[in-house]
Amino acid sequence: MAQATEAAADCPFCAIVRGELDAAVVGRGEGWCAFLDRSPVFHGHVLVVPAEHHVTLADLPIDQIAVLFAAVQKISRVLPRALGADGTFVAANNVVSQSVAHLHVHVVPRKKKDGLRGFFWPRVKYAEGSLEDYRARIAAGLEES
Image (cartoon, rainbow, N blue to C red; front, side):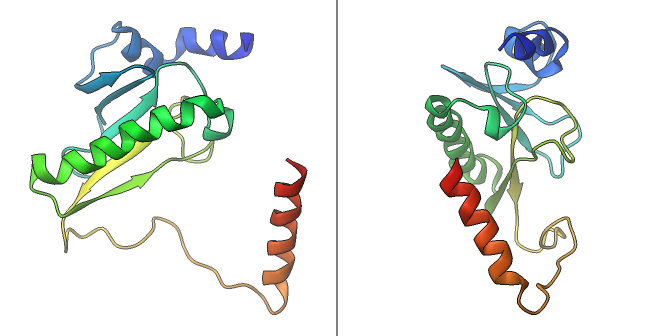
């Protein structure tokens, strides 16, 4: 946990949570803070962060998951009404493509035919027989955890 505390001292999202760095905060609650992304996919793109410094979803203590995702759910419910959007896109990166090393969930307002197509990464197919191999490896990892 000391490592997380050291990282928190230089973390811009922790500074936003503490009120030390200016941000367009849209809401706060016990254990979370939400603010507009400075480089949004679409206007109204919100980042929801845990108040404590945790780098990835895997690092977030289990008792804080419901708190964070209740806030994500609330924001994903509000954005369509507040912005006239048709729905939302919800995503979190873990390490890869994570521009700030503090867990954050993107809640992006969406409209039909807004130009955003599918996922942001290419799709691949499983080679003959490899689907079961991947399934078994993941299932074994889940059993071990």
